[in-house]
Length: 431
Image (cartoon, rainbow, N blue to C red; front, side, top):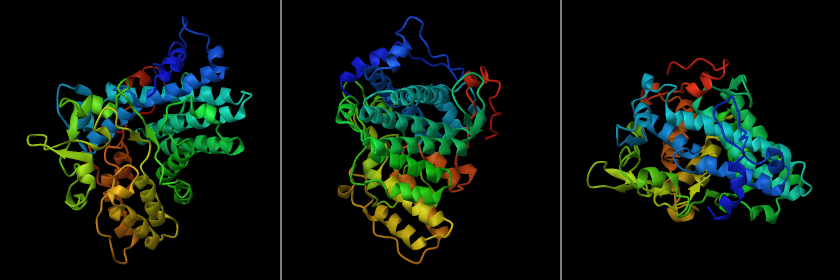
């Protein structure tokens, strides 16, 4: 991220902090929050802070989401049993409880993002420059939607809002809420296109409008709204990148914490932890994208989007959007297996050079008159390879009805930081 982030975000860090859904965020010794939230500079600082909270370091939502999903779906191998939170997830079952720091970080920082994004979205509408305000609203909506999506992927119920003793809504309502946030952002941008001035004041990399459509497609799919998922996916320009960028001051969190050491996690094996019918074809070129061979244990090491400290991480992959189309065709009220297979084969046959990120299987096409019941397992297989270590696999395993014996948890217990402060916290799931 660029140097200007530290200048803008300073004013935010002295105003906002987070502990739990009790939501006491003010710092009495800091700047006046009203002053921060009533100026374009202050609001931009808060907005840029959303990206830092989502992406940076071991506390970031992104790293914790990847870790949670990766350990319990067998994508990654624990390298040091002294890392207790990771050991709990790697072991799974009742070993995972409300004390787990990875889950607490994921929960706490997702809720912080929602709180801060609401401040930006609500106060930006009062600005005189509507095109600058549109940028603030759209950019902040991306992170609010991601935060709502992450909470809904890992917990059966999520907080209905921000405040003390809030109630809870179902995870499907959480995905629907994320879609509503995105729809508001898209409508705002349609009325007032984002100004170049705003784009120059936030970190480069994110294609805001394409990302909104991509996340809408993702969460509509997760919510079971297949027609909406297909429409949203068709609105994404698959030739463009949308990335979280890193540099020498702000390192790629996968590289910083895992790739650069042998102390946290590495790929389970060269087959990305997949077994049985889901084992990748040895000729699949995505294997050499995501892993590097190693002469000693572990036999595979991380590559892909954790290769270096400056490697950009995609907000979404073009292949994800294509596979959303395939799945939506296969699952819609009147299934369309012909188009489902066409979309699936776009991923199966794609050469690395044809993908903006270099992710390509380069395999021969699947052929035959396949039924939806035959196509869906193949979509799961290729999502598991194409989207390796993206934090999406646990959601996929539930949606594709993969036996629970093949994962170490289905949903997660609520952090004690929430349970101890909110009497409305639901019961923990059995598994």
